[in-house]
Image 1 (tube, rainbow, N blue to C red):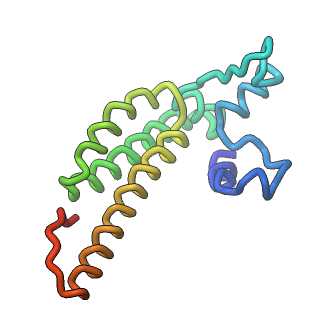
Image 2 (cartoon, helix red, strand yellow):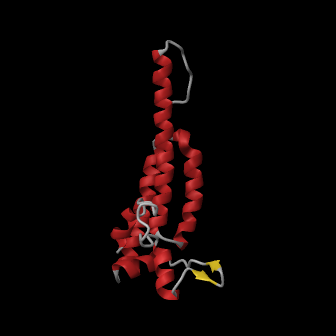
Image 3 (cartoon, rainbow, N blue to C red):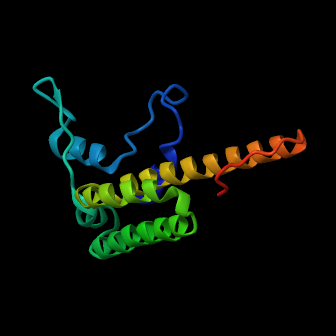
Length: 145
């Protein structure tokens, strides 16, 4: 189930109204408690990367999930190490990544992807701005990524 649900996250519910819950926490809260709604409140339980790995990948899953957790964080470190102008984002990510030890590797992965996409979008916009200004004959001083 682990790799099956992750890509489904990108499909909007407006296109697939019967789309299953893709977040591990939601699926297992429903499996264990019957619903994510209790006494008119929404409550999703957390299972940690160890629990997520154990349920989805069996006995070796806890180790595999911690490896994946480290792989995602190491990839983020490598990405941001080459971009000193994005250190404030990396600082923020490094603080909030500690909270993901209470949740799932999938949640960490998507958060890192959002940060990476934000930086890549910034880089693209700066490049376009530099190209536009150099084509128009004006000089523009910007921070270059």
